[in-house]
Structure formats: structure tokens, C-alpha cells
Amino acid sequence: MKKILVILLSLMANLSFAQRGEKPNVIYIYADDLGYGDLSCYGATRIKTPNLDKLAASGIRFTDGHCTSATCTPSRYALMTGEYPWRKKGTGILPGDAALIIPTDKTTLPNLFKKAGYQTGIVGKWHLGLGDAVAKDWNNEIKPGPNEVGFGYSFIFPATADRVPTVFLENHNVVALDPKDPISVNYVEKVGDEPTGKEHPELLKLQSSPGQGHNNTIVNGIGRIGYMSGGKLARWVDEEVSSTFLIKAKDFIQKNQKDPFFLYFALTEPHVPRMPATMFRGKSGLGLRGD
Image 1 (cartoon, rainbow, N blue to C red):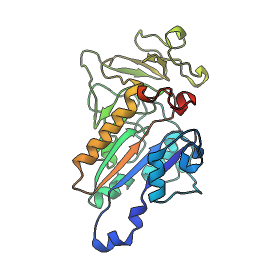
Image 2 (cartoon, rainbow, N blue to C red):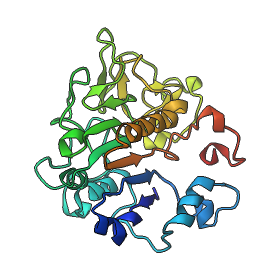
Image 3 (cartoon, rainbow, N blue to C red):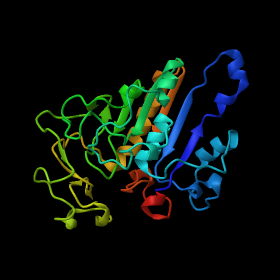
Image 4 (cartoon, rainbow, N blue to C red):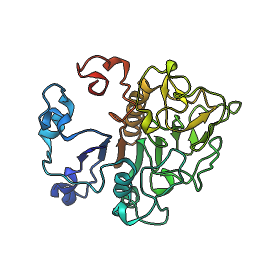
């Protein structure tokens, strides 16, 4: 899974800020499974990315980049801790019910910003585990998590868009959870009686590779990795995930516009399941991934 980082850190090196004692705002945009050649500022011709092109033209466009890992969890672990993920066991791609793997008693990227007087926030995909154990209660406060490793504000989903639980968490709680419909998650055996992609492929609106495990509990017409029951009101709609994250990112910026802030904006697109916002469907001419 190739990734590209769009890093808006060039202002940090600007001596004029240091001379004036100012603290520039920092937004770190992290796209999932986006290839080097998927942006028009890097040579794409059929897909147009005018806004990212403006950032590239007015800042620094990197042409020789290297990463510690080309997969989800380990690359994020390296970003948060500054450590090579292969030097620590348990940093492989995590299931959606994994425990937190980021140490809460050591220096992290958001902690550095917080110590420097910044408001810190994460919006988007986390995929570094939550809580102290795998068998966690999704119906009460879930911690430790992003807040405990340095983020003052957190609006995330736990793992990947193709894994359960398919819910948003704001700080320590599942958004829109109905106490009368408790959530249960299991990656070993089926929970509840909801249909799975393996049992009822006719219910799927998006076909994916069952060899990768995308044939368990069906949510929004898409087979997921892992089993889930309950939490029906809290479940996201894939077509609305990107706009929800965008709104929350804008809210964080608006709220902290008078203070220096660090925002880690971790997008999920174009990671599977590729289900673009309705407003973009069919616009690229390159299928759902292009959209």
C-alpha cells in the first residue's frame, strides 16, 4: 500500500518566524494508498488536483522521498514516535480491536507541539490501537488513545475503512451511540446475526477481494474485515466519511485560529473500500478509485 505525505512544514524552517518569535500553524495531511504519480503536480494527466498543485507551487515539492514503511500501522507508528517500526514488535497492520501501541509515557510528535505551546488535534484515520486490551467495551469511554499520547482533540475512526467497528470516535466516545443498541466486535468469530459478505454476496453493492477478508459483517452494503453487531445509528456511511472529516478539520482550525495549532489530518482515501462521496462519483472517468 503506497502512501504519499503532503507535508506543510516548510514554514518551520523560515528564519523570519523564529526571529519574530512567532509560531506558525502546522497542518500535516496524510493520504492513504495514494501513489506518487496520482497528483497532477507529480505528473498525473487524467486526474486533476488543482488545490494540491497550488500548495506545491507556493511551497516545496519533494521529488525524492523515503518512508519507514509502506503500510498502514507501521508508517503511522514511525510518524508518531520517531522510531523505526521494525525495531518494535506488534507494529504490523492492526485489526480494528487492537490495544494502543503508542507509549503514553514517552515523547510523541503531538506532545512536542503541545510542549511548544500548540493546540493539537487529529482528524481522520488512527489505526494505532485503542484502550489497554483487545476485548474492549465500545459502549463506554475508550482510552488510552490519541488524547493520551498528546492530542488535545481527536475525531477518528479506529482502524481502516474496511475494518469494523465502522464508527467515529470523538475523544473517548463513539459518536451517536445508542445505549439500547450496544456494540460488539470480534475478529475471531461471528457476533450477532447480521449478514456477512461470505453468506450473502447478493447484498453487496461493492465487490471486493474475499481473499483479504472483506467478506465478514456487511455495513452499508460493503463486506468488512471482522464481525460487528449493534451500534446501527453510530455507523458511518462510506460516501459521507470524507466530508465528515473535512468538516471536523475546518471546525478545529476555526476554533483555534487565534492560537498556534498542529493538525494531523489523516485521510482515508483512496484506501479500500473505494466508495467516493456521491458528488464525485463518475467525475474522474477512472472508476471509483479515480473518483
